[in-house]
Image 1 (cartoon, rainbow, N blue to C red):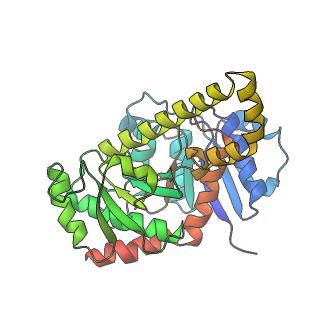
Image 2 (cartoon, rainbow, N blue to C red):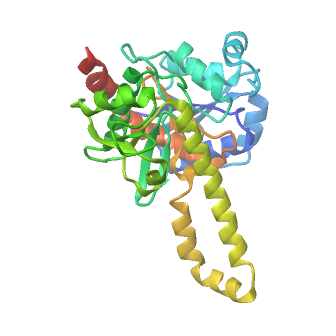
Length: 337
């Protein structure tokens, strides 16, 4: 039997915890027999939710955690004081080697701080970036960084580009992924001080396939496979993506329901439209991995439903099977030394 991939899941984090978290965990183990999920949270509450489902009992274990870190709490203080929180307990399972990965829809700040303080960075990685997959015209691209390092330096962005390339090639199967840096124009001389200083470093980096600058309007076309930026710009791009996507979907639904003729047309195109829109859903791609840590930490949206939790857990299997951390050490850290 193949080795099990063990994933610690914060059952109490997010707007829809624990219901959607537990449901997503059950769906993940029912889809893949190689996964074992450790749900951390208030044991009675989590087990009550689990009681509604049919699954292999050997694939899910509940680990009691009596505290919950709320979104508004200062992350560093919460991680240090709430030792028995669902996030800290789960991260310690990764730190001690019990689990390979951690998934949470809880406090972003606590997950980012806890990932670095508890799981720890790979030696030689300056800053771990948060890197979600975002839908594009023909597939998806990796946006790196989208929230972990607002005040990044050029050397950080170069490491982001290398780690992003490793991830896209190994996890997504994209050969020689195209790397671009977010800019306000295509010309090399454009951009702020960070972009101007980083551009030549990326241009002269032999480990990546750098294709130059990318403007925001070209991101949805799939012009680049790895989109490099500091977290301030990356988070704006991600949130705008989400907002525009939700607005367009609402407009399409409203238009299709506006008259009897459009309703009849909607019935005819419903299967094709549903399949098309599915490809543009962020939740279909799972969560955002925090790359460069000693174990995998995945942050999902606070409003995550079961499908995103399931896909985030399944994402951890590929991460382990492809030995992403080993490849990051080999292709990023050792190359820099």
